[in-house]
Length: 268
Image 1 (cartoon, rainbow, N blue to C red):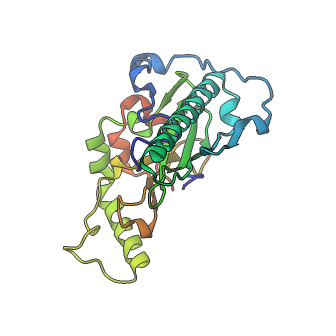
Image 2: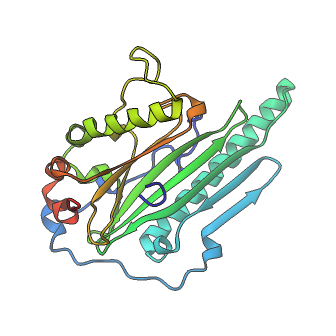
């Protein structure tokens, strides 16, 4: 479902270590159902403006986001602000590390950061977005990771998928058994042997501590939920990342906050 369903002090895909979300600013539940959609399409967007690339002696920087997001003024502003923040952080850390390398006599290796946002699904009331990012700060290897948001067209706010559920614990409990079964199957297939019960990276991980995506197969409601798992979370670095997609079921529906249940459905 990726695109379609860390190192030290590195910015995440939105550009900062802890980007703001709408959980602090969303309208109260009782207001959401009657709130008019505030979104107004902006002017036509030049796709070239949505991908910034810069290559200097200090760093390589790349950041892109989709035209459907840029067509929403508030969402475009969010991406532009976080792109600027990511670029500024990369430039600052690269300059600082080169100065330190010159003092100590160690060779400096240019830093890099890249983030590519794309649409997971576009629904009447929601725009679901995901990103994969990569960062390198001169170590043995770079690190990759994921980020995701949903734009709520009714309230005009940017939220995390988990904000739509009553609690992290409720969502985890609703799908942990299914999640762990799929993860173990993927681990066995990738490793080519049964899991060692006492081995490193054999235990299940908490699904809601990963990047959670919301997807749709019907174009009207969210009916599947995805998980993007960065390297080192479920396996050694060499195994890379894992991605898991599960259909929405009754347990997931019961874990939703009441005001969001109409935006979800159980697939046939």
